[in-house]
Amino acid sequence: MLSRISLNILKRPPCRQARQVQQLATRGLATSNSAYQPRNNLRSALRHAQQSLDDISLFGQYRRIIPVSLVAAKPSPREPPLSMVPVHISRPAYAKTGSPPTWETEIPILEEEEIECLRAACEVARDALALGGSMVRAGVTTEAIDDEVHRFIVSRDAYPSCLNYMGFPRSICTSVNNVIAHGIPGKRPLEEGDFVNIDVTAFKRGFHGDTSATFGVGQVDPPGVALMDATRESLELAIQACGPGVLLATIGEVISVHAEALGYSVSQDLTGHGIGRSFHQNPLIYHHYNEEPGVMEPGMAFTIEPILCQGVATGMQWPDGWTITTTDGGRSAQFEHTVIITDQGVEVLTA
Image (cartoon, rainbow, N blue to C red; front, side, top):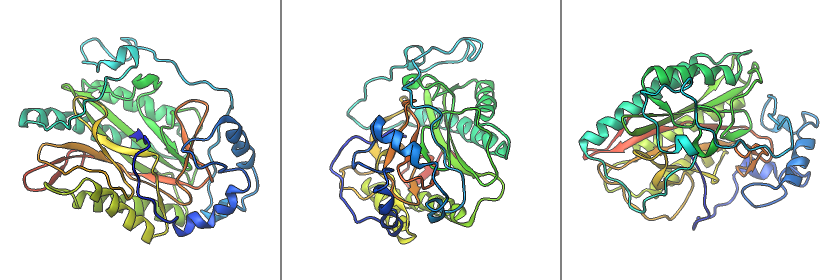
């Protein structure tokens, strides 16, 4: 997924639960309308995240994820050694320097041979996600999940696309509870009642395939289950709406209508994206109401990856330069597929 660049967004009133948590904003958890909060606000958020469960009860019973340090420590790009990715495996251009290629302005339309290459990458990502999801249980660390998924992707002669992309230090993203996106796998064991989004992208035969899902750890409380269900449903409805001649903006409308009807907000900080020879490319796919131009065409490939939040959907970036959490401590969930538009409609390549 991509962090949102400011574009012409159609504003909508906050959902019911977003209004409910406005009181939290006055306590220092959401002190700005900007997408990401500066360090002094993060310090305030860290302090308030350790207060009583009175605020948590707005959203259910779970443990908020908070930074272990406020010291800025974004990982530097580092080329993976051959011990991690053997020499026979094709690497994307950014694997060496961490710098992604410049985006092309045109939206690529794939030929059948290219679609088959994309399909191969998507199959690896799909199977890797299934492996990661099967490991989700109390006591397992996200670092351990990352290690196993990495080994699996490499065993399929593919490269884990996240690894060293703009310096990202691991092979997958793992986002727990109130982490919206880009969580770096670490040593914290998963706990009963958590849920975790696992985001996997694989590079094979010159193409990237991208998918993610949110998995419950043991018995998740009813509000958490409802959020996961609503997010999965919003993705399914958005996919059903796709087809040749359909406006790209339809995706955001379908997701927003479903989310707001159930009392959730939709993240505007992160987007879906075109995918293929590049990890991220045009078109950008907005999951909220928008008036962006663009019509779906056969051969157009992109991800749909809505993030629904219990409260406000504004993100706050941690000092690690990657992890984004909700400003009010509410949970978020995400599900994602890579799709391609066909003459007849749409095909889900990561299903």
